[in-house]
Length: 190
Image (cartoon, rainbow, N blue to C red; front, side):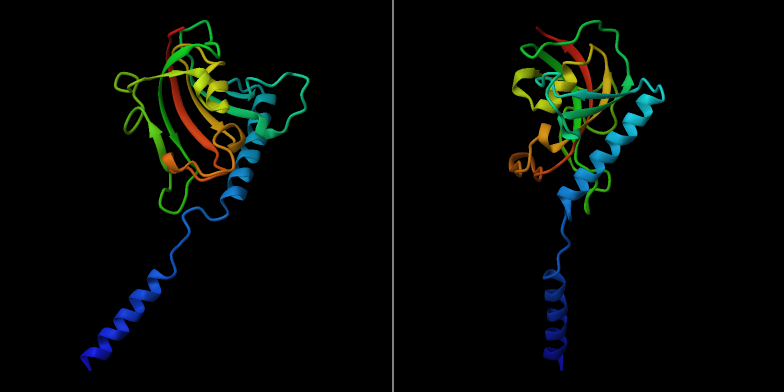
């Protein structure tokens, strides 16, 4: 009798393990739908006069080149800084940031794949990291080249301007991911 009870328990445990939930179901479609919807909402807010939203063309695209939504990043201005100039592609900068993905099964607020501070952003405790803009993804570098020192933005980067369609295993970012960054440009180092 004891052996039968153990076998039944073992069978149930095995069947639960064989049916794992997918962390990122329909990931490509979910990300594309999310970004296109946000693009539409940001466009409407801008048209209504909301200056806290911006849609920025990929830094290297000429104005006469036809574009799609994935050639732009969306920026929500959280705070304007005191700076008066924007960095150039060849400049180095100090940036406090946190990068995350869209919500998924285990990460209801989005998986944080990289950050320079822990927890909620606070300008006095957020540590800035140094970057050469030319070494960053197109989306991140597009944002920085439009910011001024002290600006804090939340940016939304489509996969085409982030890590593309392939998985970026080093940072555990699945392909087709929209990247969401909370970032503050602390200093332009030239």
